[in-house]
Image (cartoon, rainbow, N blue to C red; front, side, top):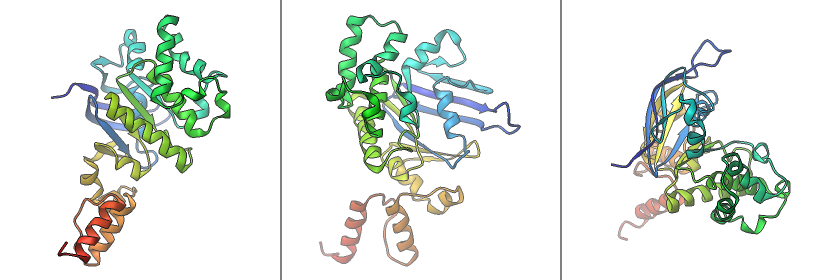
Length: 281
C-alpha cells in the first residue's frame, strides 16, 4: 500500500460571512504519486478544499493532514507548505521578482536555504519545467503558460511531495493550458509528485488517475475518469459536463449505436466506430 500524502477527515469549513458551510464532512485520502482531479460547479467548495490542503485555511471541523502533519499545528506551517506547493489561477499574481531565476529563488530564500544549495536547486527546477533558456528573462515578458511554469519551478525548488493546482489553467489560452498540464503530468510521471488538479476543463480531468466530484460542499462522485464520466446524466444533474467524446458516445448509444461505455478520447471513439464498420477486422 502506498504512503498517504494528503487526507481530510470529516472536514467542514464555514466562511465567517456565511451561515452555510462551504464544505460538509468531507473525508478523502490521496496517496503518494496519485494524480487526482477535483471537479465541481462554481461555489461547490473545490477551491476551499485546495486552500485547506495548503493550510491557507484551517477546517472549522475535522482534520487535514499533509504528509502526516496536522495543518492546525502552527509549528509545522512552513513544513506543510513546503511539502504541499500551491499553483493559483492567475499567473501574474504569483510573480514576485523581475528576473525568472530570482522568482524561483524566492521560496528558498524564505526557507533560509544556503546559497550554495539554492543555485543547483533553481537550475534543476527550471530544467524540469523546460524554462532554462528563460532564467535571466523578465517574467512579465513571458506568456501565461510560461509564467505558470515558472511558478511551478518555484515550488519544485522547495522539493515538495505534493502539487496542488487551483484552476491553474483557467486564465490561459489553449496552448498555455496544454503546456502547463503536460508539464504537471510529466512531473507526476517522472518524479512521482502527487498532484491535486482542480479544474473545470473535463478533458484535463480525463488524464487523472482518479476524479473526485464535489457538489454543494459534499463528495458526490469518485472513481477513475472512465467510471465518473460514463455517468453522463448524473454529471449533468450536478451541473457539470463530460469530455466531448464521452458526451458523443452517450448520444450515439441513446440513438441505438452499440458503443461501449467509458470512451474518453477521439482515438478511442475512432477505434470503436471502426470495429462497427469493419467487424471482420
